[in-house]
Structure formats: C-alpha cells, structure tokens
Length: 145
Image (cartoon, rainbow, N blue to C red; front, side):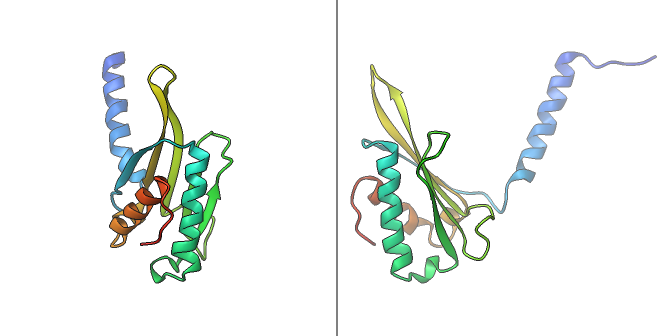
C-alpha cells in the first residue's frame, strides 16, 4: 500500500526543511541590524552617507576600513539605493556592510525613508562606531567620529 502524505503534512515538512536550510545560507555568524527613519529622500540620504564614509573611513586612511572598499548603488533599479562595503582584494565578494534606504509610509500618514544597515561588520569590534556614524550621517550631520 502506497502512503501519500496529506497536503498539510507536506507543507509542514517543507516548512521544516526551509527552517533548517536558511541558517546554512548565511555567511559568517549572526549579524546586527540598524534600522532608522529619515525625512530626506532615500537617494539623498545614501549620497550623504556615501560621501561621509568616503571622507571619514577611506580618505582619512582609517585602519579599521583598510581591508575594504566602498561601492555605491545610488541608482538601484530596485528603487532602493545603497552603499556596500566589500573586501578590497575581492570586490565581487559578498558585502560585509550594506546601508540602504527606501521610501515607506502612505501619502495619508506621510512618507519617510526607511534606512537599514546590516552585515557582519556591524557585529564586529567596530560595529558601535559604524552604527553611530551611519545614524549621524543619515540625519544630515557629515562629521567624522
């Protein structure tokens, strides 16, 4: 006698497989996420963050960022401009930090920019500093720490 599992049982099994597979897709350990709201347009916020990061992290020759390079995707086709930090020696590798913004809200309640930063670099020893820099730059203050 062939036993065919019910659709509900197949769905539960698929859910368990998915739950078991998702952690395997992640690179490195768990990553912290920074979430902010901004008043400016997403592109303006990302441009400001990219300029400040270039000045404060890279042009200043900050040793904390010597192993990385900045890649911006301001004109993202997905409508979500972002800045990526990637390994300097392998720019096609997965980013170690992503900072992105997108428009959220409704016209009735008002729109705002949802700003997120995530990646393994936020969970590193420099994570608090990076979070503080991103908060400051996203709010319009371009000062270095």
